[in-house]
Length: 314
Picture (spheres, rainbow, N blue to C red):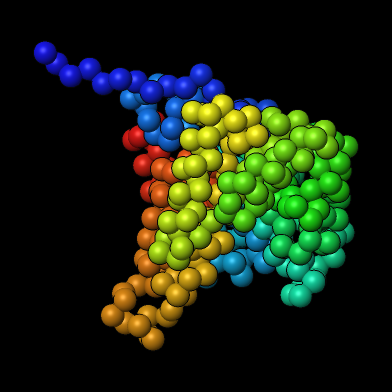
């Protein structure tokens, strides 16, 4: 007698959230099975990959592979247009790290104009990532949400300290999607989703960012939190944890010693670029396997590899 596996599809499902407009719009979430469990049921929307760009322009390209891919680009808009051609890319993420008051402190108006130029350069969905300063991000997200009204962008992210202002502005007044960022804790993630929906933000307009870490740097806590969130959303039908999850991978993986240590200092470690690519691949693969519905990455080779993995598994 042949073995017939028991399928484990759930009655509950992850909310489907659409980013962007037109033919290039993408949907994340929507499934009622665990990550890559195609043997349990159909995965409605395969995980998506976003390409991280920064307001630094070509200065962000520190590795030869990146410099080669973006060769000839003069502006951030040019970089966005080139990134849209990258194999495996589904959306663009503009990281406004230069807006940080403790750094370059670029003005809100300058950042708004930059976001508009990127949105005009490509018809791919756009995610706006802030500078991690609560006050600056609040103003940034709401101003950009207003300037890009109708583009169906995602602002990444609202936090406990500013969810009311961002939810009311970007989410309700301008109809954009809102990221809900918490500190790698299932209870904090649920609490933030709950208060945002109580504010009036539609649950189908919220994407969770529960945090990340590079593989080997406390990552097991990230993985276990992702697992617990997805399990509660599906097996327990917890509506306040059924928002899809997006994980910014590149911000963590390209900042650890394996990625930044020059070959001259650690020749036994091998190529610095290859180390960074491998760290990005390993981390992205792990968060996707743990339940993330979308990842934000940087290096073209890493993105191609993860896209190929998704294609094989979905």
